[in-house]
Length: 344
Image (cartoon, rainbow, N blue to C red; front, top):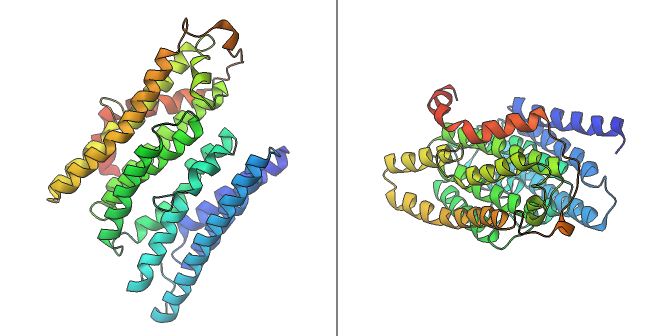
C-alpha cells in the first residue's frame, strides 16, 4: 500500500477511536465507529486476493448492520427521552444497543464473522482488528454497563467462553486460533462487566497486551501456521520459545500475565455469592486451556530434529524492540497486578 494512503488510514483509525472515546453523545460515538470501520477496509484489501476481498465484504456487512442498529436504537431513545446522552437510556433500547456493540466486538453467538475475517487478512491488519478496533465498542459498553441486563451479559459471556474454547480446538491456522482466543477473552470481560467494570477494563488492557505480543511475534517470523512456527526455530529459537510462553499466558497459566485477570474475576464472582457461575466459568475455560496446551505441545513435538531440513523456511527474522517490550509485558505483569488495579 502507498505510504501516504497507509498514513491516512492509520490517522483515520486514531481519529475515529478518539472521537468515540471523547463523546458523550450517541451520534458522535456512532460517527467515530463508522470512521473506524471505513478506515480499516482498504487495509484489509491491500493484497488483491479473493480471500481478502471476501473478508472485507463480510466485515463491512457485519459492521454496517451493527452500526445501523446502534443509530436506530439511539434515535428512538432520543425520541423517547429527549436526550442523546450515552448514559441516559430507556429500557427497550439498552438491550439492542448492547447487542449491537457485542456484535461489533465479535461476542458469541454474534461471532461468526470474526474467524473468517481474520483468516482472510494480513497479520498486520489482523493485529489492528483484534486490538485497536475493539477499544471504541468496549468503551461504550463500559459506559452503559450499569444499565445492561445482567442475564444477557452472563449468557453472552458464558457462550463466548464455550465457543472460544470449542472453536479453537482443531485449528492449525494461527489467525483463526487468535480469533477464537479473542472471543473467549471477551467472554470473560463481559461476564464480570456488571459486577465490576474496573476489572473488565483491567482484563481488556491485559488482553490487548497479550494479543499484540502474539501478533508482533507472528509478524516477525511471517508465520500463519503452527508448522511454520516450528520450522522457524533454527532462525530464532528465543522468539519461538517466548511465543510458546505467550500462548500459555493467553491460556491463563500461573505465574504468567494471563493468570491475573482470570484469578481476579473468579475471586470477584465468589465475593458476589455466584459460586455456581464461577464453577461453570472455570469448567468452560478448560476447553480453551486444552487447545492452548495442544498448540504448545504440537510446536514442541515438531521442533528440530523431528522436521526434515527441506521443510525449513529460511526467512529473515525481523525482531524489533516493540516485539520485545510487548512480549515482556505479556509474560511478566502478574506480580505487578496489585499495583495496577487500584490505578484503574
